[in-house]
Length: 386
Image (cartoon, rainbow, N blue to C red; front, top):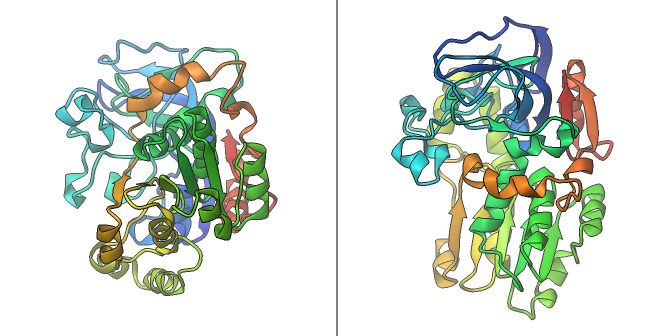
């Protein structure tokens, strides 16, 4: 089959690789019809390269058609149309039972002290072959895949794999409720969708912050009221927003020291760089520091952008004095999918049918990565179609 394969920093290629096969009774094989390119994939393209191995298959936002199932997958049959969550979870352990499949005790990557295994996302998360491919082996298929109806285009449902539940959790963790004010930092796919979901949950004011003109223009169309940082406190009576969602993460602009440290790690031999990142890695924290400055006293910061540093300096005095509450983590897809699925209708209240800015053949993946990383051609959300 054809698949997007990682070979090094800013070096991805579409190559022929072996077709996946059933390995465990709880496996399924899915023929991929659409697979998203995520901002988290760019971390592998640029920053988290020490944890990658040449030959790793990328991607974690797929949907498609079931081609084969193992003997312990009674809920799926050949021909079912499914969306596959980016995390791999069993659905029956204690953590899954408490709504935290990202911490699944069956698939935790204990070798590295990490949570549930993820598709296409470094050795820290199990080095499971990813979904930017023609076919995907899906472990724990008795629980993970979400069945969706045939008929509507893939764009209607594919974001259930990551974008929708990640944005939904970001808004839920922010405590957004009718009448509240929320600022969203970063208007890429997650931030843009978080703005829409915050409005859906009744937020009175949604403030979008980004430096890319195309993203700001799109957010205005979604009902975001302002984008200038100097206007945030004016919009909130000088108090600051009730909640701030950090949808940026480790590669924030405006953090030259963090950027330099990340680039330096990328120049080291991979074994040395991996150890450095595991023990003294740092993030670019400008977005998080901005969130801390903006949020009102007693407010909440919800972090959906991926961070990976181990020695990040944090302004603990300010955080403590302002009594800021933090919630963060990988999205627990199956925790939220039943709430989201009823909204994926012809009425399309979240605008998923027109959310993608680019539909790209899988063979053009290398160009798409470069375009998305450089934020050219108005690229906000890219979907691959094998």
